[in-house]
Amino acid sequence: MTEARITVNGKETPISPAAPHATVLDFLRERGLTGTKEGCAEGECGACSVLVARPGVNKPTDWVAVNACLVPAAALDGQEVITSEGLATVGEDGTPPALHPVQEEMAVRGGSQCGYCTPGFVCSMAAEYYRPDRCAHADPADGAEAHADAEHGPNGFDLHALSGNLCRCTGYRPIRDAAFAVGEPTDEDPLAQRREQAPPAPVATEYARDDSTFLRKDTLAETLRVLRERPDAVVVAGSTDYGVEVNIRSRREGCVVAIDRLPELRELRVESDHIEIGAALTLTEIERRLDGQVPLLAELFPQFASRLIRNGATLGGNLGTGSPIGDSPPVLLALEASLVLVDADGEREVPLAEYFTGYRQSVRRPGELIRAVRIPLPLSPVTAFHKIAKRRFDDISSVAVAFALDIEDGIVRTARIGLGGVAATPIRALATEAALEGRPWSAETVEAAARVLRGEGTPMEDHRASSLYRSAMLGQSLKKLHAQTTEAVSS
Image (cartoon, rainbow, N blue to C red; front, top):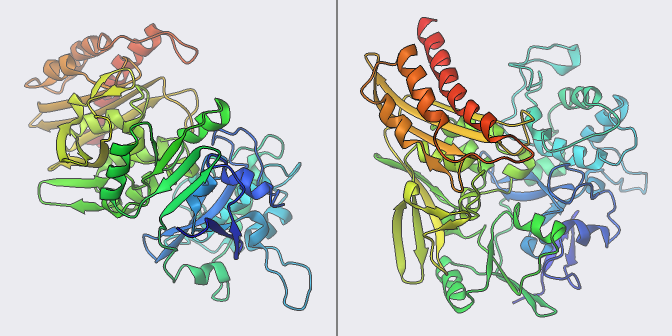
């Protein structure tokens, strides 16, 4: 093993003496790169955003924005990171650094006041600035507003790129103005040129300090052997859940094993009878590679946390934690997905409906990993995902409902409904499915089925919602789906 290093703003920097649990945020700030800020330590404010070179979808490399407060520094061994300080261009003749285009627009349009959140906004904005498939709808210079919707600028800028960045004093209008004003990267832009070369390959890592070890193996087989030998090891991918535990609950583990770069867990294949999605692909990668092929997933993605979180979060991680309020399980239950589980002895396939056994418990055995998610084809034509939360985006759901229905000649032939937030585990609404199947897709059928749906699960009381509210929202979600499909047919 070579010494663990990260290339930061073009300069190789040893990770030592940071502890294995130390975050990228702390690693950077201890080296004087204080533009990267800590606001929440939970991945919700974006003040810590930095750029990481990752395998691209449309080019060899994508510049991806991630929450530096969540990712262990050791997880970026051998990787490239750009901070807000690294975006500016230093003149060869010793002249002061020239502002990056996104920094320039933020400055001239009043996008910064106290400045605490600004470096994070700039990094998230730069990731979108360098997105290869960002297409202008009009010339930003003429002030045109010919964008497709309120969340996309005339320059093709997707405001969801900033959904994980919060500002408490400037207000979002000048920040949006800056985002919608940036142009295209020039041919001389070094970060734009960098997209044409492959990102750094994953490197095997064994970083140990103070009786704690961070491991990354080259292959799945090696990883599974480690998990058999170290049943106490904690498995991480994007660290969007583990990082919160480290920061807020001071979690410290003796052995952490990273699986996010294992090639065997990063495949996406579309077969004649199913789609297989690698458990370590990030949600952003899945979204862009599927490009709408699974409409129910396409509806889920914008509502799953923020772009910063989706750039690290994985389906394997969301399912592996077993949370009853995870957003992906209801959708995957409605899609009748199954999980491919693998350990040192081989692999097996388990229907997701049989995976959860109790609160944060599952059939997954010690030393076993989720290798992939399989979604059977063909897909049901009528689908919807309803997330009831206090905020439209970047929030935890009170209730999540996913529908997948096959309606033929006005009759519900099949119905699959996944629920989250109403029981100790994500569940299928089996009684409601039975109340719909074989019956007309009519107001009378839906009213009767909605009464059944309100009784599914055992909704709890907490600070997000009462049990009565959760039950009411279940029934209303089915009525909403019927109204939406009726409007679509009539139009």
